[in-house]
Length: 607
Image 1 (cartoon, rainbow, N blue to C red):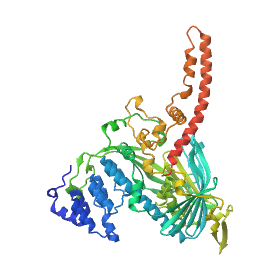
Image 2 (cartoon, rainbow, N blue to C red):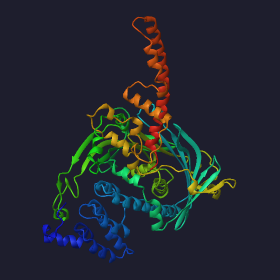
Image 3 (spheres, helix red, strand yellow):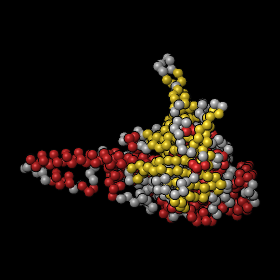
Image 4 (spheres, one colour):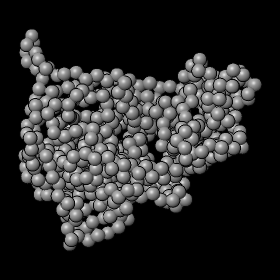
C-alpha cells in the first residue's frame, strides 16, 4: 500500500493539493465522509460544479479515474452517483472501465460497466438530437458515399465487400440507404435497408426500413430513468468474469507527428504536384505519414495461471494483424507516494499507484491518402461531419473515418479518402453523385441558380410505404455491437503472444479471431461446419495438411492397404492418395475463401 499519511506530504504541496484538487486530495486519503460532504456542497446544476467533478489533476486523472485506479469502491460509488463521467480516459489513453479491470475487483468492474452503458445510452439520445438540430441549419443535400475495402491478405482482396451509402438530408431529417447487412453463412449478406432519423426535441425517432421484408422497426430515442436504465444494463457475472480473465487491450491512433505532403507526378527533374480527377472534380493528391497505430495490452490483473496461457508460440493471427515496427514490454517497479503524486516538479513515470503495471505496447506506422477538391459543392464541416457523427455512434468504420477527418486536414473537400481500418484492410471512401447530378434519384430534384447547383429533397423520401408492417425496436434484428477495444481484444491477445511454449498450447486461427475467449460464457456456439472452416484456415496459414474430420479415415485406410510385398497395391494407393489430395486441395481452397470472408467480417464488425 502507498503511504497516504499527511505526514509524508510537505505542507506546501499539501496546501496546494487541498486548494487546487480538493476531491482528489480526499480520495487519496480515503476520507469518504469528508468526500461525501464536499460533493454535497457542490451545485452540479451549475456548469462550474460539473467542472469541479471532472477536473483533471496533475497526472491527467479526473476524481473518478483516481478513485478507480486506487481501487476505492466507496469513493467510486460516491462520484458515480453524483454523475461523474464514466466514459472518460486518462493521459495514458486507458478508459475508466479498463482501469477498473486492472484493479481485479469484480464489484468495481460491474459498477463501472453498468453506469458506462447507461451514460452511453443517454449520450446517444442527446447526441442524435443535437446532431439533427445542427443539420437543420445547413442546406439540404443528397450525396453517395462509396465504401470499398482492400486488403493485402491473399484471397481476401477478391472477396472484400463494397457498399454505397445513399444519404438524403432535408431539414432535421436524415435517411441513409445501404445494401451491406453483414455476413451470413460465410457469404456477405446483402439487403435493402434505409435508416431514417427524425429530430423531435428533446428526443428523436429512428426507423430501420427493410425494403425486402416490407417491415419498419421504429425506436423512440429518449432518456430513461437512471434506476430503470441501470437495472437493464447491469452486466452478468459471466461478463464481468470474462473481462477479469483476459488482457486489457487499447487501440489508439497517434496523430501528433502526422504530416501531409503533396504527391508528385512526372519524371525526375520535371516533377510537379499531382492532381487527379475524381467523379468530375479536379483534386490535389496528398499522403499522410507518421501516423502510428498503437496497441497496448495490460496483464497485471490476471492470475499467474492465466498469464501462463499467454506464453504460447506465435500463431497465424499475427500474419493477419500484421507485424509491428516496435514492441515495448514494460513493468513498473516503484510505488508512487502521495507527496510525489501531487508534486508537479516530480516525474512519476515508471511508478505505479496501486499495483505494478504489466504492459506491452506495439507500434505500427500507417499511411493514408487524400484527394482534395477546392470546388466541391458540399461543406465538410456543416453537412458531412454531422452525418459521420451520426453513423459513428454505432459504426466503427465511421468512427475511424471521423477520427481521421477531425485531424488538421489541408484545405479542400476530401472527395476520396483511403484510410486503414485494421491491419487486415483499408477503406476507400469516395463521394459522388452529389445533388443527384450524375444519376437521377427518386425524391431528389436538382436546381441551378446564379451558376450554383442546389438540391431539393422531397418529404416522401422519409415516409415508408403504407403497405409495410410497423414493428417495435425490440423486434429488430440484433447486432453484436461493442467498442473497438472489445471487438478485437482476443485477437490482439493472440498477436501479442510470446514464443517458447509447446505445440499443444497453440490456439487455432478461428479461436484467435473470436471477439471473446472461446471458453467464456455467452460465446457463439461453434457448430461442426464452423469447426471445419477454422481447421481449414488454420491449416492454410500454418502450411499443414487439411483433411475434413468426416473424411479423416479415408486416407489412412488407403495407405494401410499397402505392404512391402505388393508394389502394385502401393502404386494404386499412391494414385488414389494423389487424387484424394487434389480433391482436398480444391475443397480447402473453397473453405479458405469462406473462412477468410469470416475473418474480414470480424475485422469490419460495427462497434
